[in-house]
Image 1 (cartoon, one colour):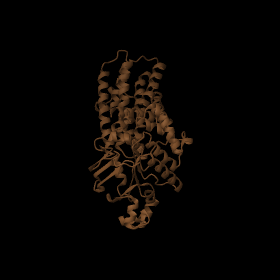
Image 2 (image 1 turned 30 degrees about the horizontal axis):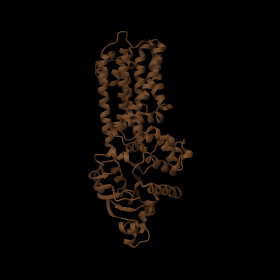
Image 3 (image 1 turned 90 degrees about the horizontal axis):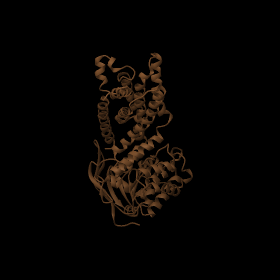
Image 4 (image 1 turned 180 degrees about the vertical axis):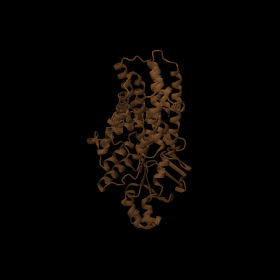
Length: 242
Length: 255
């Protein structure tokens, strides 16, 4: 059974890449949108662009993983293709994990472009181990968040609307543009219950000349967020088929 | 092709949606190689029964075994040996006919070397080979239905569940699909068919169960049902058995 599920996860992710990702809307949300935002902030307050690179990578992770993730499950529920998947010898958790993996792989491709592009152009020398330790779990976390919010609502467009709330909240409160340490203390407490805060801070520490070992703790925190999002998402999707 | 081996055994199967009793303690058996029709008006519980038998929903009470395995405990094993054609043609619009079939072959674990060959074989059988590279969305209703059946056969299932296979098709497409179903029957595949087209059931089915408001009223061969009720058509026999007004049936056929 586990072999059937693993096969299912892999091929669902592959199929999603073909049908939903690497298409204009997903690429636009996943890469063009974060770059435009960061450039807008830079032009308003020109300084050292290097400072904005961790925020740019974090936004790319957030937007690329959730670009299609937030709609594909509901869309497939509506047109009946999700039911078609469940007629195959694959479990509901495997179907959901396949969807999350699709978003994660697309996010990984977009993030790799942005990260390598910005490091090469700006001559940055990050700690690659730390970068991977932050980027990989973050991709899974935000793809799972997209899946969770998608199965929470019934309509395709409700999911996008609902997802915009945590997306924009995190952009402003997780240190993407404005450092968390300079925020009022109440907002700082709030920032640390948001997963993107650990992504941004972890990325910042990956770009420091003497990297901070707290990155390992951030990886564990991000894995905790992954479980926090993925299990309710599986439960909610299962409920739709009772 | 029929044998006495029981391949589907349903005992007291029940489905409730809140206060609504969709399927009410039904029991029946289907033999290997048989075409078994599940007839009833809309809302009779046909689709709810298929959903329980194919693992898409859980029964509230009772159990069913398929190929000797309980749907409650061995559904993953069962799914490998059955094919299901839902009441809607639910393949991927963006993928071509060939890619849809290959994707299904991947999900069912058809060996890599056999996937394309099997897909090509099915596309030829269902007369869709010329359109193998066309996206599913460009297909007519009849072609979509045919490809959905082909997708359900990609892993060579022993039992095929067909939920309203000709619903919404024009006369020509429906006739062509019935011929395909007849061919499958000749190949020895057990077919569990739900329909509210009674002439279709009369043509294709070895035995039929008549279901109304979640309960099975009778199970017999179409010929026996006509003889018992002294009617010339299965439709008249159905009206006699169920007590439904002919107008109700006409409205439902138009849906």
